[in-house]
Image (tube, rainbow, N blue to C red; front, side, top):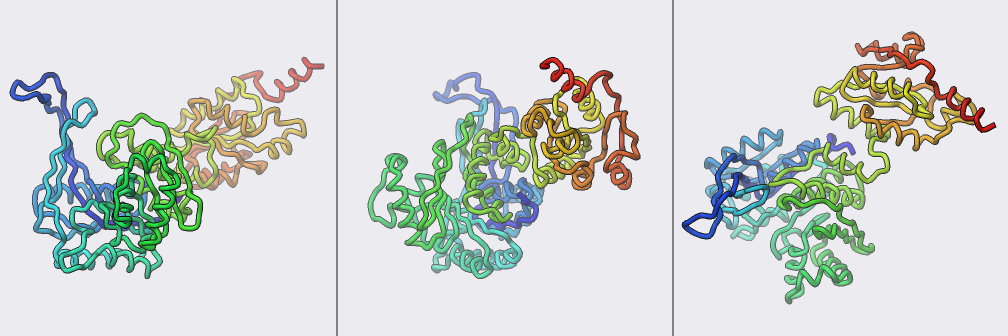
Length: 489
């Protein structure tokens, strides 16, 4: 996933999330409430600003358009947004900046205090937001409308609707629009490519168009009703699709004319669900902006939501966390293809880590292999092992090799603590692979001469180093195979 190439524009309500954490050791003598002894406090961007923050943490170019108050909370929020590298267009508002203060103890939320003024935007505010939105839109890969019903995306008293204008303008540019909705009036989301309600929001919208009440709890257990409601909502408002987020039950993707796609939740210990919806729409938009289809994007967003709920407070899911979560479902999370590995190397290098590369067949792991890998790992921070494919081993070692297939060999290598990544290659030498990886250190055994090592000249050409390490006497796979076969005769 090349999120670096995606530019996503977020339009919506921003707020400052303020946290106060401490210990509870007694109940107040004044009232039956806990007394929190404050230990620390911090602030983070919330609402649409948290969505933009999540995009930036994924590696996207993140743009944000919103209203902000001319007050202390607004000043802090501006600084927090700038620190995340978000390109922001913030229109000054007469109303105060929305601020949510959460009192925490032992990782649990005891109380939330909201400071805000909710109301329709003025014509002046809508005009300012529209000008910035139109300026930021060109070059975007996707648009997110993050609606917290505070004012930015509400209809103005004059009837003007920034939501509809944004959707229509994005459609003219061929840019997909994703909406995280609020409230029952979905008419202002008409024409959006995707709306991502939770079950309660889904039921509210259905009640609005049906003119009757719906039990969200009963709706959870009625698949046919969910499908019928989704079809009605898509038809009524010209929506491309609905991604229904269902908490522990995962997600359901509804597209007109298609059977619903059920995505099961990843089982994790839940610490805090706040911000999970922001994570879903941020990751979904990043994936769409990077060129993935809706089914694959929804699956990845579901995985990200599973990570988000393990975090306390409003906290985005970073690219490394998402990659790790996606790899958990694989038999071998350390086995990469070349595109994945190049992205992972870029991430490692951003943290100043040095890359080491070695290669071989590693058919039957023995003490000599373990020594080679441990010595190799000592030269840098991340060790990548290039593993000859089965066809490559046959060409090099003969038709009766390898003893173990490439997946078994890769799994054994990945089990070693010293190995950070394994990649298969089918050529007789790893030279092309080395050119793609550009390691800081290229390592081989002392039975080689530097001038005969594939890729050595290339590595030395850009300032990398070639190192030879000591071998363990009497250890070789070929020798082991000969002794095994002799014992079987």
